[in-house]
Length: 217
Image (cartoon, rainbow, N blue to C red):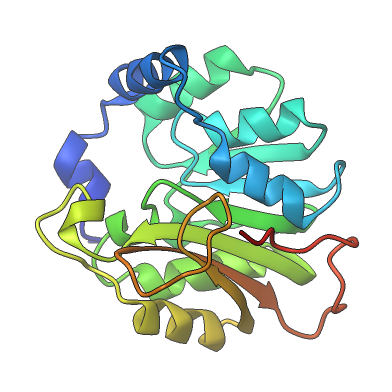
């Protein structure tokens, strides 16, 4: 039997409405809640296929769809997906554990994004398998973009569960090469702090990314 995800241990997989309300309050206060979508949009042109992995209530996928991207979302928390489906019923929302995600028969994605500390909140021991599953959903040359905390200050946990060395190793084993590492979704260069956004590209693909590159600051 697979262990529970750390997300499920923290929330009980019933946090959809609370999570949505929190971001609604942030947006109403003037806080920018679309940094992840903005970065993804800087990496590839509108019309590209994007999978929001660990999509939660669909915030990133919905914003990218508004910008003209072909989006789908996947999450293991049915309460979160219920909010996503209510908000954007026209998009494809998949209930699945990322470590067992089977995208056979689905057109490959140009980019997979894992925002919101998805990687550290996976079930212990499933991280490498999850990265492999996400890589399998990419087209040759496609991008995996993941942002997560590296210390307790940037996590809803008492300590970090994943290091960048861990993550890079799982990516390398799945044919993904590190292209850029950032400190924020706004594109600031990574300086060794407690949060990182990593952009990896699936090997054996074209070197270009639709004429776009990661924004610098």
